[in-house]
Length: 453
Image (cartoon, rainbow, N blue to C red; front, side, top):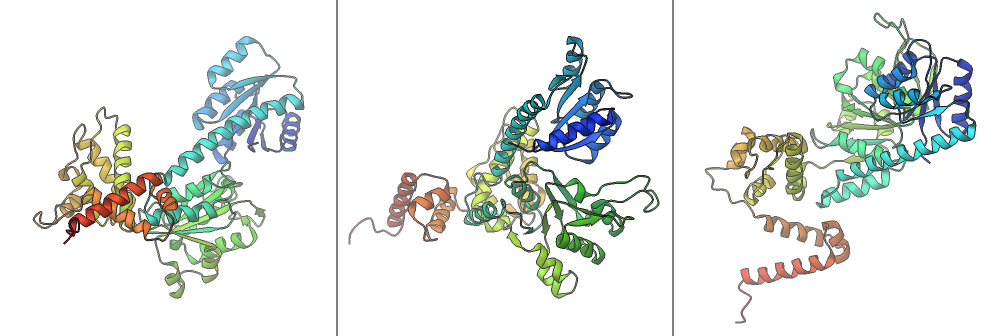
């Protein structure tokens, strides 16, 4: 059973309390709202799977709430409770976006049956999202990518804090989301914060929250990112940019799992997993006293290094084709552009200082300029096309066959069995045996060993 985050809206406080207690007793999380307006504020602050609302409330009606709630969160499953279970009421609720309606009065068994059905739907959605997120590694066959995948599969199910390190554009945010989606917290929220984009004073308010009157402009209580990530994962990107005071606040949370909103002395205990990322050498920052040593070791329970694209060139042809196809679909192109072996070979030799992000952007441009034909060097960004042009065109680029053979030799050189090597390469063992035999025959021909002397 998937544990649901349920929001209950009713202007009768006793009903809200009773339903919240029942929902929690059935193994789910529940929060209540005394009006449609309050329910919308709760939806904006937190992550919910299911809205159960009364049809007739003072102020905003249940139908109006469903319509507005679905606008804010299109994936939200909404059910309307009504003592007026007339056909017209049901139709208006469904038209507003409700999944179903629940006639009053109902008992705990009926509510449990409803929650079970919603839980199945939400579970299937999250399973599909998890499968999609595992496509982060799909088609990647370089030893570096396979080693990274093995690490992620081991650490994702744990509750350990993770530190992702890698160059700008290497894919740290996508990998953090993959770790979340492959964990037991996949049903909870994934909340991201880019530390470098917030001034020191704003960081504490944004991440830890504040209470009304804490500073000029604080007109109401506001939960921080930590509270929004309750039951899920908080991703702190560019962690190396944090100021000393913000580092101290973060260390406190990692030690006692509590936060205090700015302007408040009340500690709140939270269930949040932290994943941090940096493009800096944090160990060097510790030596220079720019980053707290104790915080570094708290974050570095699992360090996961994402290799730059130039260290896994075997992945470039697959990624280039995938990004080009995605760009063509995104831009509504009826005829997809094509990548020739020559262009792919050139892409494999480029250093890619901007990593995966640079490759994706290059394919986005190429998709638009080369619709319906082969991509040419001139279709790529200027800096990239100039680098690929080489010195007067005198550079020799390896063919895809040569790149493939080099990759096969590298995997076989790892000392694994033929069956394991075939699995790592994404082919069956028969195909690998055939390719290996062909490689040996070509090698004999190249060395003139096909004839006996």
